[in-house]
Length: 366
Ligand SMILES: *Cc1c(COP(=O)(O)O)cnc(C)c1O
Image (cartoon, rainbow, N blue to C red; front, side, top):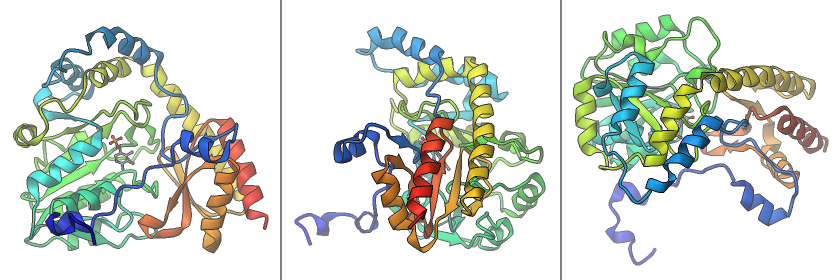
């Protein structure tokens, strides 16, 4: 096949790369379009807080120095914000990094990692890269089936990934369901609760993972600055859990995994509560507006608790996606998730969503 194929470790040979949303520049180069709306990666359409920009500017003269490898001030500040101890926090180069560290630390060849059929792509990727076996549990109405996931636990199970809300489906499970699930999980099995969209959730019965940490030392909660804080480009996320587990993970991570700009950006972002509130409010209003428009277009969608919605575009999805791109609207096809008839669309500004609705109308007219 190639000169190096034989030398690549077997679990890496069969990996397929993570498919990111098409960058705006790339589409602009290809089509020369003036107006492009990128609604493919669940980014914050407001950008980030001006306080973050100021903090980054202030840090720029110090780039010759290595970052604080322990992210001391960031962890202090985040710990106070969350009401946990600094030793319970593992910051990462995006939450992606900490999710992968969990798999590498707890699972290897012969071990099993459980996740939902429509799980975030990073879980199966990290599992396979570690040489462990992924167990994808069928979803129920596109949502996690937590009782089936508990049934799937075997003596080989090392890690279980849950995303609440889930990406790409936007579905949620409630407190009672989560509680019942945790009671069924043996304490030697690690549960990772991915709360990347935590701040967007509006329902009262939403289980906040941090509330369960003292009762379940095998629970780890991940969150990110990539979504509501609008910092996807600086790469900052974190894991919260039992201090002993965090200590082990800390030994596996790269010494300088979180760069200086990410650390100062994260601290400034925590200070701007108004920015978060404004972002959540915009998302709620625009979600309501956009889903109403989808109904008018007679397009079905999965009700979502995140900052995106997954829309049923049917057998014609590939053509519709192509038409949207031609019209300057970038959304996320879900073929890689086994949802070939669906497109995931991020909740942008009203202007971007109007662009998207017009383009969908045009694309579906044929
Ligand atoms: C976006 C997202 C993340 C965040 O990834 P980062 O590496 O922090 O940018 C994590 N989990 C899920 C389910 C997501 O959708």
